[in-house]
Image (tube, rainbow, N blue to C red; front, side):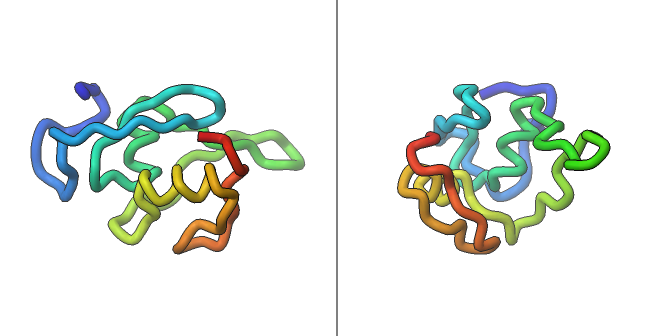
Length: 95
């Protein structure tokens, strides 16, 4: 996977091990070791929601190493289980 939003080297990801997932109905690709936030950013997705009252854009607030990994998030979305670090629920079959 090549992306203008991803550095060529460094970090804790395995660039040679791609993973596929969907977000908001779009098929995307991450790599092993990505957090969900880093995979979305690497795919050029910066807007992930909007505020309720004024519909202002919302992006990734934190993309640290303590975030949920793509594989965990995809599994939780498929099974409708809570994400390990946030308590948020997957949508059940979304991936």
